[in-house]
Image 1 (tube, rainbow, N blue to C red):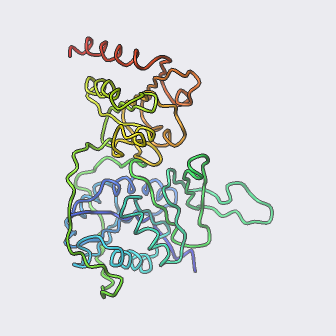
Image 2 (image 1 turned 180 degrees about the vertical axis):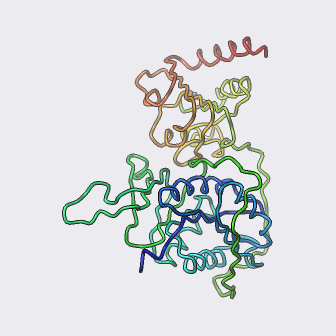
Length: 346
């Protein structure tokens, strides 16, 4: 493999029902940073049926080029035709880096494609940067430059691993939604559009979709919240979450929780923050009765302002908190809620 043939940073622009998923814009934002370090450009790969109208939105969020594979076989996500399409794009255009969102679709598509193009894939990355590999020079081993360094939690979140793919291209990674930040939308920005179709021949790996049943969710997306009031095991019971909800209501925020709360059945998994939940970046994050295990912190440490309330003054959550209150949450939270009501006139 001639590694010098591979150029550019590519992202998979996921769309569902002809609406681009927000993870695509987040990936473009990170890709622009990586491309700047490599003196190259960013290409979004858009797969679907009748999706050409989505090109401008990708351009306005920073894509320099958009490769469109538009075919009726891509109307609804299925592993085989989508993997064929993306692998064909990679083999034809040879990107140096290929980023995919770690969504339900991306976690299926990414590994399938990486196997087909004979390269590695690092899953669930939280940090991506360009640098040298090995990180520190090793006697007798060449240190390669301008490598994609892919960092992710490992061993249940108890350590952080930085991984590279120095001998194969493209360098592929899946990235958790909410971890990277999208760029401001630049209205009217245009991108070079490349239409490509590798041809599709259905085979016995093409599943037949008999029916699509869409569940109607009533849960708000905590990833969109500006203020999150998050409760942990220390809240004590499902009933006690009423005071968490009351505080969130006063602040105009939303409720979220730690993994222990979900495991105890106090709140649905949609509200979970952390390595096995959602990654959030609110302006204000209240961590109430949360000890601060690394798995939880990984999902909220990028919050602008973190306020912790815990009776254990040695709780790890205080290491990442901007403000901490050591005390009984059953006394502190109602008092805080009452004070805010009086201050805000509610």
